[in-house]
Every structure is written in structure tokens, then in C-alpha cells.
Amino acid sequence: MNVTVFGTGYVGLVQGAILADVGHHVICVDVDADKVERLKQGDIPIFEPGLAPLVKDNHAAGRLEFTTDAAAGVKHGQVQFIAVGTPPDEDGSADLKYVLAVAATIAEHMESDQIIINKSTVPVGTADKVREKVDSVLEARGRKELRFDVVSNPEFLKEGSAVADCQKPDRIIIGTASKQTEDVMRELYAPFNRSRDRVIVMDVRSAELTKYAANCMLATKISFMNEMANLAEHLGADIEMVRQGIGSDPRIGYHFIYPGVGYGGSCFPKDVQALIRTAGDIDFDAKVLKAVEARNMDQKTTLFQKISKHFNNDLAGKTFAIWGLAFKPSTDDMREAPSRVLMEALWEAGAKVQAFDPEAMEETQRIYGSRDDLSLCGTKEAALRGADALVIVTEWQVFRAPDFDFIQEQLAEPVIFDGRNMFEPRRMAVKGFTYYSVGR
Image 1 (cartoon, rainbow, N blue to C red):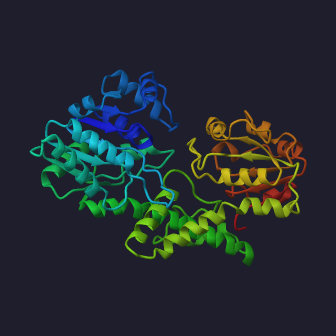
Image 2 (image 1 turned 90 degrees about the vertical axis):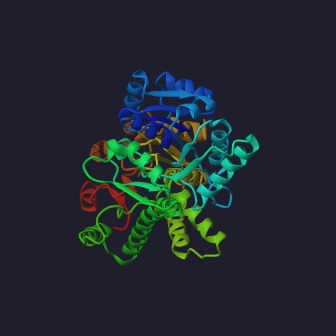
Image 3 (image 1 turned 45 degrees about the horizontal axis):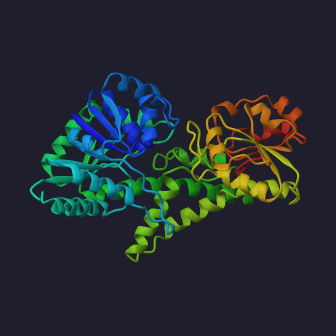
């Protein structure tokens, strides 16, 4: 099938590459000419395990193309994916200007009936707005005879495992009322639906809400566990034991019940805020979602609070080694990352930071530029030299089995603030460390 994908960001690029890999002929359209040229040269703008060879191989085979020519993209595709960003407005609502711009572009260039697939994460009712936009442009062109359908087909990719998630999806949500469109969508996704039927067909608005509900549910689990962790610290309980105790209940399970320093990234914060805003637009008070967001914002400050308390609120002139900058392992994404909240608080208090992350160093440099109170180090060991304490913010595998003797030699004081509960407190005490973790 000939497929067009508008947007070469995280969702569009992964989806386009995976569809091309199973034999579809995919053209990815983007307005950024420099980005398009880089992609043609095999320069992948995001870090995602397995994505680079997938893009390069399918581009070399001619199944995956990149262009800025929107007209050529619309002409090519039997289906048109919208996979552009929906950044939050100042009020937390999702900004649909890019989605609606693509809708207008498709309508401006379409010369035959089309299926428009909304892959972007959008509020309930967006399909109606896309339909209205396409209708208005077709009417202005005098081409009202052209027929189209707007499908909600939300993505459920996890950063760090997006390629695998796309190749072997848990479910494929298709929001449409048209049997003809459903048949086309089933054909498109047939290569990913062989061992069992993963396709769930529903109305468009339910499909749009499913995406938000899924992310908000996961965010709720995280914030709930962080609340329990804070309680555990005050009550003298061990949240790791509690986690095992409740996770063994099959109604709860072990997924997303690890305490930490708050969630970040491009999805959970934005989607929780957007659904709160959607609820407000219909005069519904989303009390649970507001509590989830408030707990997460507070949780991102807990590491700094522990650091400040340990050093008697006197951080001026001190240096802290930070391991982990990305919001989670296996990505370079620092959007809404807890590390940013911590570093900015340390700088405000007059401290310096020596940081290392396996993948997010360039992104950190892009965000903060050059500053006297930030040193980006080439190794995790280099970040330790002369630091007053070690702070672990992201649970990369490379941090799980460090040389504790070396750490102790390098630090001015043997103290570790662990935001991800990577080590056992008793073991750390035996090794001579003052060890702060989460909920223990």
C-alpha cells in the first residue's frame, strides 16, 4: 500500500519506518528542509534503539522516502497519516495548529478520495475539527465531490522501546464508523495482526479518549506509588517491600508501581494537562487528574529537599555529581525531566553540577548552553571527581553495578542521593555511605 506520513518526529518517523519495513511504500513529509536532507543522509535526529538501521535500510531499499513536497505526498498516499506535534498551550490544552495545518494541506492537494488517519495525540473532538477543516478547503476549491474519512488511530509507543512496540503492538485502536475504512485499515496493519487479532474498532471519540485515558491511568499509578513512598518514609516502612506485596496481586500487577522522582517526557505531563483542560471545557472537575499532576510536580522536588536538608540548607559553592539526565533510560528526551528541576534548584542555591548521561548530553547542551555551574562529563566516573555528593536521577543500566570504592575515593563526603532505588540501603551502610533513597 502507498502510505504518506506527515511529520518526521518521534511518532511519524517510527511509524513510517515500521510500515516501510513490512513492504508498504512510505513517503514522510516534513516542512523542515534541513531535517529532511539529514534523514536522506541517514542522520536520525532522535535516539531510539533500533530506529537508525531501520530507517537507513528501508530508505536504501526505496520503500521509505523523505520530502518537503506536500503535493507529492498527498498524491502518493492511499492513506494519509497526520503525525505532527500537539504541544501544550499556556493553559495546558493541546495546540492543534499543526494538525489542522496538515488537514488543510491534504485538502488543498487531494485529487481523489482519501482516508486521513490521525496518529497525533489529540483531544476528543479533534476528528470533527479535522473534518470541518478539510470540508472548508474542498468547498473553497470547488471540489466538494471528493470524499474522505477521518480515522482516530492513536499510538501507544514507549520511548526506549518504540520500535518493538510498533512491530508487536498490544492493540491497534481504529476509530471509524465506516466499514470500508475499517477494511483498508485492517489491510494496512495486517502484517502486525497475524498471531491474534489485535485490532479494536470503535467510534472516533472513544478512540481519541482511549489514548488519553491510557496515559493518564499510567501516570496515576506512578503518582500513587510516589505518594505511598512519601508515606513510607514518614511511617518507617519500606516502599520496596510494599511494592512487592501489592504487585503480587494480579489485579494490580508490577507495571508502573516503581517509586521515584516523578514522571516526565513528551506524553504523560502533556496528556494529563490536556485531559484536565478538556474536562474544564465541559465544566467537569477532574479531581483525580489534578491530584496526579500536583503529586508529580511535588515529587520532582524531593531530591533537592533531601540534599538541602543533609547540607543544612547551605549548598553555595558545593558541587554535585548527577548520573542521569534523560527522563527515562534508553532515550535522549529531556522534556519535563526531573533532572532539570533538580539542576535548576541546585543552581538557584549556588551549587555546581557535574553531569553524565549515556545519551542526553547533546540535548542538555542544547537546552542550557555553556554555563560556569554546569560541567558535562564524558564518563560517569569523571562526573564524580571532587563532588560533594552523588545524585542518581535516571536508572540507566550502566549505573547499576558501579565501583563503590572508587565512588567513595572521589567524593568529598560518602553520600549518595538515589532517586530510583537502585541499591540496597543495608549494603550501602556496610560500605560506609550515607544513602538516601525513595520511600525507604
